Length: 401
Image (cartoon, one colour):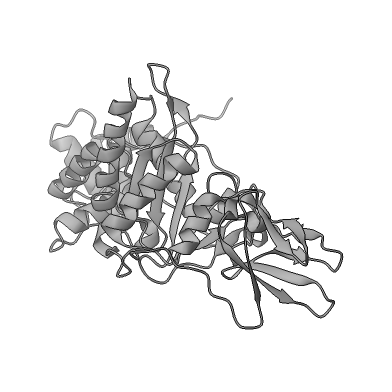
């Protein structure tokens, strides 16, 4: 004879069926079915109440949750997300705290749960992080306008087929986006943009840029006509390492947001594209929280520079132990009865030469070493100077993108 197979529901029905026969006491049934007397009377009361499914287990979930996020808070979270669809949970929370600082807003993780339940969070594929020892952390600027960063975002074409080269300039310390301007990637195209920036905001202490034109060149010291002009205004160029955009990582991160918000897809014309850039710059500076500055907006921290543009370019000054030579129109200087080619980008500029222990002469423009003239009169140019960097681990948290 096979064993009988039963489940909890059948056992409950059988237990009360045995009770209905009147042949068993409650204590006997409780021992037989291994339940407590309160449990027995619970099932008896449910059946007596006329419930059709009295033998079915009920949910053990509490009837109420005092810690549940109020509906008004959820509605506020969703409203900010709809206004700023590219904000993640951290930025949504920062925006709420900015608009209503008197209210206690839930943690970013709770905000993320609210957005997930509403279907407003897109799943992203995990990104492979570089080993900590290979990550680079640059020496950060300590105050506004200590250093600006500039670059051309990768060019693209508007829908009418025109080439668009956006020049971008940010303040390294505050992330303030000073300019996004369509310009030709030449010294002649870039200089008017910086002329206006210097007039409107004053001068930075230095400008971080890559080593390619128009910011740098393969000439002596890596100088270009643009960086020579910066030096004559008292601004030090900071060249990053070749093919190392991570040395300007904060600026490159801004480029990703710029592309997503303004050029995906591109505008129909350059004029419309520039209008998009102008709207984005205002939003980026005043509306968008930045995790790197404590979820503040850049406009909350940035102030114009106290350094006005000088009325006349600064002339290089060299110590008395330097010999001074002025660069001719063909890029040469006269040296010991002969001519030595230095660089055409320094045409008309005075250079300082100081003798070294081996008899060679170091050639400088301001404090930028350009190269060495050896004892045979041959000039060996130096590569561009790189901004001082140090290796350091980055926090092991994935930034809110």
